[in-house]
Each structure stands twice: as C-alpha cells, then as structure tokens.
Image (tube, rainbow, N blue to C red):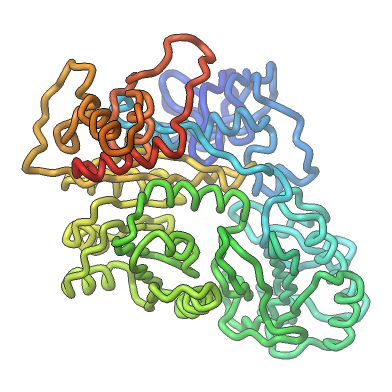
Length: 547
C-alpha cells in the first residue's frame, strides 16, 4: 500500500510496541501510533510511510480501548517521559509482559511451552518512586527560570512543576532553586552559545534514610551567592544532607562532568539497598526505584541458589550491590566494573558491611572475564548485569570457558537479553526461568531476570518422555520423585509430596513438567512447601547431584 503519507485512515489498535506506541494495520502494513491503547478505534494521519511499516498520529479517537484512562499529568504528551500515562496500570503490566514474551519468542527463538515467562513483578508504587531526577534548567516565554524536561528527540525544554514520577519533596526543591536563581540574577546556560552558568538541577533522595543530595551542574567552578544558597536551601529543606557543584564545561549532551565540588556537607548521602550500605554522590550509578530494585535483587538471589563453598562472579557490578546482597551466601565474591568511581564505592560498601570475602577491580567486563578464565577462576555462579546493548561476545565466551553451574542475567533490555540467552543456549546453557520486573512504571522500560543452567552434554539427549515421574530432560534427571521421597524419609524422617518436590526444583532452576501437579480447578489454592521440608528436599537434590 504505497503513498500513504499525509492520508487519513481509520484503524483499530491491536497491540503495543516496545517503544510504547500502539500498533494497528492498514492493508497488512503495521502502523505505529504514539499515545494509543489496545482496542482504540481511531482515525490516524500517516506522517511517515516506509516499505514495510508506517508512523501516524491520532486525528480522532472514536472509541477508547478498555485500558485507556485520562492522563493525570498536564505535560504528559509534550514531555514524553511517561509513555503509558494514558493506560491503567493493569494494561501497562500486560503490555510489558508481552514485550518480554515477544523478545524471547521472536528474537530468541525460545518455545513458549519450554520456557514460559513468569508473570510480571511490580514494586509497591507506580508514582513518586524515583530516587533521582535531573532537571535541565531554562527560561519560559516570560523570561522566568524554570526546570523541566526535554521534549522527545529535541532539546526544547518542557517546564514541569510537579513530575509525578519524583517524590514531591524533590519537585519542591527544584522550584525553590529556580526561584533563587531568578531572584539573584544567576545566569542560565545557553547550549547554542555555550554561555551562562547553571545547566541542570540534579537531585537524589535516600529511600530508606530520607537524606537528600542537591547538585547544580554548572558551566564553571563557582556559584554566586553560594553560601546564601546553601543556607536558604538547608533551612527550607532540612533533609538536604549535602549540596554539590558538578563542573561540566564541555559542549556535550552528557549531563554531568567529572569534577564535583562540595558546597555543604560531605558531597554524598547515605542509604541502603537490600541491606547493603551505599554512599551516593552525583556520579554514582544506582537503581532509581529502590523498593522495586530490592524485589529484583531478591529474584536474582533466589535464582543463584548459592552454596557455602561457591564463588560468585559479578560482571558489570556497578557499586557492587547485587553481589554484596549475596555475599553471605557464598565463599567468595569477585566483582568487575569499568567505572572507577563505582569500583571504589563497591569496596567502601563491602568494608562498611564488614564483608571480607569480596574483591572488586576496575576493568572492561569482557577483558576481565577472559583474564579470570585464563587464571583458572571457576565460579559456580556468574551474575551478568550488562548495559542496554547487552553483553559483548568476549564476555559470553569467557562465561563458557569458566563453565559455571548457573548464570543469572539481569537485563534492562529484553531484546538484548533474548539475543544473549540464545547465544548461550546454543552453547550449552539452557534458560530455565524468565522473570520480568517493573522498575519503571508509566514508562516503556522493563527489567528481566533470567536463570540459565548448564546442561550436562554427556547425558543430554533430545527425546520426549511421557512418564509422570520423569519431568526433566536427562540433563538434570538423576533421581525420580520416589527416590527423593525415600531419601528424605530415611535421612530426615519426613514425608514429602511430589508437589513439594516440584516446587523446590523450580526454585533451583530445574525443569518440571509444565502442568506437573497443578490443580485443574480454577483459583485453586496450592499448598506451599514448609521450610523444614524444603531444606530436606534441597539436601536430597544435592545428594543426587542435581544441583
């Protein structure tokens, strides 16, 4: 259907794409339309027409889809940060679940029956959850100093007095900073001319501590009226624990520079994540949704199933929070990160916790992994937490060389996670569980945790079995349910059911039949394995060398 540009057409939105746009079809061609919901019946104007797909904008909404709601933010559309604010959260969660499923089916080539994607996990908050915000600063049409966000694909400032993703306290501090800059006549940065002083207002809040860091990113090394600024801000907002100037004199889109000058306090705030104490400065990498990140790290820890004698290798470790949250479960922790400040933070965090079995060093993940493999390091578990582009091949090759029992991948991009899992699966690591976690409600982003288990290639045979008691491929099947029951009864004096055994095996990343021991009744309440029986079953699995 050529020549669609600038034409009007009526269509129904069928689904959502991973960038948050609705997807409908005209004559078999996919049309991507922002700010639409599944089930919307619309008239669309085609603004870009390509060979296999097109892009459009809504001209008229005839009938809303079932998940559509009225957006509650006045700058939702021009800002573009919250691409799902026109959906109720149930519809958003369904969409994100679909993004992960689509990536692993279509891009990774994994069969839905063999690798089901677990239901999306969400944190307790869908608004006011961010512990960090970076507001660009500019002037409105009346010449007043304002903070806000850049409109999508531009550097046009959209003023925003109350961003619903940030705690209200951070929005109020930003407004107070703008008023001070206006009152004192302090210059605002003009990126076209590379003149003016204040570029961004950068704020962090410790989720558990309540401490606030206030940072001004400036095109210089001095803030006029700096002492008065610190006094006024700390008087109005007592939770401000430190005020910092970050020096950025470069002609760049990068927000922060490398130099930080404390004006008040130590230059950092303190908080905890999964019990790991952290110090947060302007340059620290840190998960922006603390409650959901603790949920995410809990999944990673559960997937890892570390034992007391294990070595854990944490690649792309950042400040070390994932690895340190598991340090008590293993004999040794090795963390690798390319950012020097993050490595120093990881070492400081370990020292603050009294952790003595951890070491961190600064290196590219791929190079470090290859070096460690050459040195003979054989970690039983490797945790991968790569950037959006995913793992490089050097890292994945080194993983194969070190041959861990399990790989736990934490990914902020389902597409690259599926790609990297496919690479590992083709070389002997079978994805066993995929768990989406929503760290960024109201936005298009979704995190994914994947457990991959090493196949025993000497025993693995591709055959189908139709026996109730054989629920695994022979890669891990070393004992039947009856043998496990007999062992537990003899050693621990406990009777355990097949249901309890299957629950524990799932926790360990071992396959069970897709519908094994599941009730046929709707809304059935499934009894959960008691802790003492779970411990006994775990002992049996270790005895039979299944984990």
